Length: 336
Ligand code: AFP
Image 1 (spheres, rainbow, N blue to C red):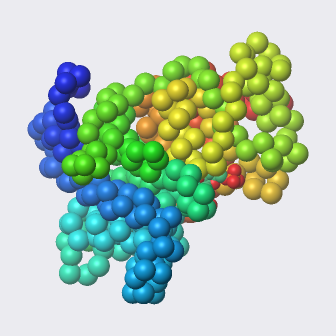
Image 2: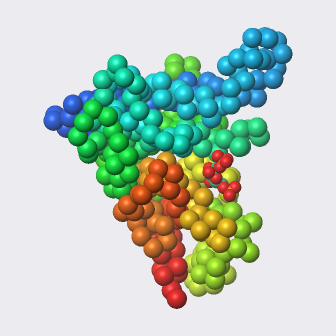
Image 3: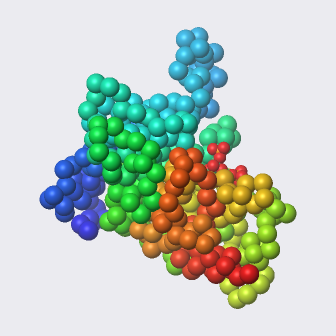
């Protein structure tokens, strides 16, 4: 890991180049994928920032009313990422939370040795009320032969990821990513349009302050989940009570807990037997990041990164965050 002094300004580009130099065997393709994703993130930032202006700008500019400005932001984000990535020759296929099947690389473009999975705009139902939303991405190596990536390339356990990250469109835009050498955060400086290294080598505290759970499902939880929540609140056992914080936008909840320490939990319940969150687009990339930061991610009984996916839009229960808090979840949930 290269150390930077507090006065050095490190763009994401410089950081990626320096990381790549540590691996002389690297082809540079993964670095290029990261630049392209950072570019897409800047384009999505622009749109998200003007989300509240759509009606105002639309009435001032008739073209916009029928056109691009009215496009739903999650659709815009999806198309932006697909278009930023499909022609680069570095990917063999993509899959998005917004699309049902594989997104192929169009004929005429070269294909590459990686596959990309992404959730273009997670938490998009929060946009109307100005709550942070995010983009989450995961990169896995192509494992099949042939020009195009197939389902098998995309359905790999999370431990095979070679890169993962998220962008949070909050009070500032931040991009956090890992390629397996720590988790690093970059803040977008809008005046120069660059992501600057602001959070090198993020470490999540071993024990967290925050508990993020949607309490309105309480009556659906089984006894073990109820006990676990009592433990986190310090009402049973000897754990110090946690502060409950739930935005309802996974990237926002995860980001706060990553920096401040805590656990995000989305248990299964009879209505959602596998929870709500998607293994490939949400749980796996965030699990890779949290582990790189010293935390853990579990589905309640096993490490998220070891789950073998069987379908693209597979859901999973999720307990992710500070190490001792996720360990407590596994322990309590295992008790008969
Ligand atoms: P939307 O994209 O529909 O807003 O869903 C967001 C999300 O997938 C995730 O970002 C949240 O953590 C989770 O759903 C919240 O779900 P509940 O509303 O059931 O708590």
